[in-house]
Length: 204
Image 1 (cartoon, rainbow, N blue to C red):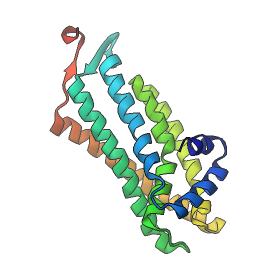
Image 2 (cartoon, one colour; image 1 turned 60 degrees about the horizontal axis):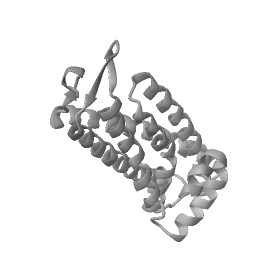
Image 3 (cartoon, helix red, strand yellow; image 1 turned 30 degrees about the horizontal axis):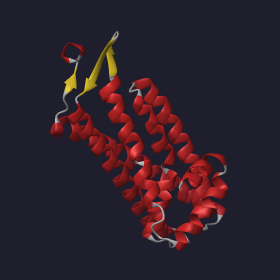
């Protein structure tokens, strides 16, 4: 897993070839990568929201209680894993339009590795901040898009023309899935879990 993690950022074309070979030999080879990498944003956000917090006005910082931060971390982890699986399902469903017949596991594996930049970007959760989050997520989105366009034709063995169209379709659906899951997660957390905030007067 660590080899592919480095290769996806240094030699993505080679990484996709190796990932494809491993997925053909072991259909669920992606699972350790997905389950471990999805922990990064969940754990980092837990640490950041409980130990550092975020600024509302001036130097005042607001943190979450340990219980609320744990709920947020678990919810984020579940959404990361579920989102990748949903995206894998869509990739397989859309494959009917093209000359490709990947298995569901292959499609979920492809989605898991393509989402790697988002998982790595979760490190920004250690220091919660709106602008930092926007910058990091923007960079992660750009590189994930690059991995998608480079990897899909290789992973599914498509012609270049079909790969471009297929990748664009996957990108559009992926954006919809990402926004839907994030909005649903935030609404559920605010309206159902009712987070507990700790302001300076209540700290210490």
